[in-house]
Image (tube, rainbow, N blue to C red; front, side, top):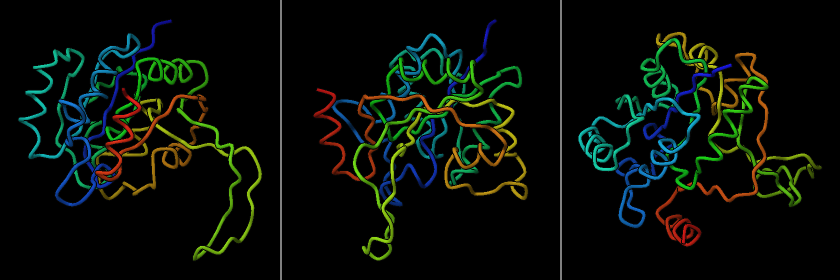
Length: 225
């Protein structure tokens, strides 16, 4: 059975910003923007049939040039997205055709994503209804308030990463076009659980650092080398 899966790369929204003036996906890593690495990985993944990238308005021209320069043929739409994650998601999903069954969502601030990781989350979704890249946490965990430990948390903890593949219909339900009907979820995992989707983890041992400050560029670059 053929499964139609598109990628949705999020390079807009406050979660993709280091500050109000700087968006993480447009910092340079080696000789190209952080965003370029995610787009290239999705473009190389055989399981991905098309790709939508959501960006801030002022970056439209530069992203179009990047797509053309790198020959990213799977990029079908470059979409201007809102500042809030939920708004940006709704904007991107609105440009994914209704005959697409699955959407693989990825945060552009995680440039170390690989075509294999994308493929594994898609295949897991085809079999089980969702696929969420995750890394097990071996160290002891604790809940705390004001740096004071309240309780030790035992076993079974996972760091939820991206990409994450879900049914397009479930994502569209969680992030509707109408702003009045839209909730600002903490993340896509919460949104999908609220929509009745049972997340299925795809374990990985590969490092998947997220760039959240300018200082994060150096360790990501070191790992890439």
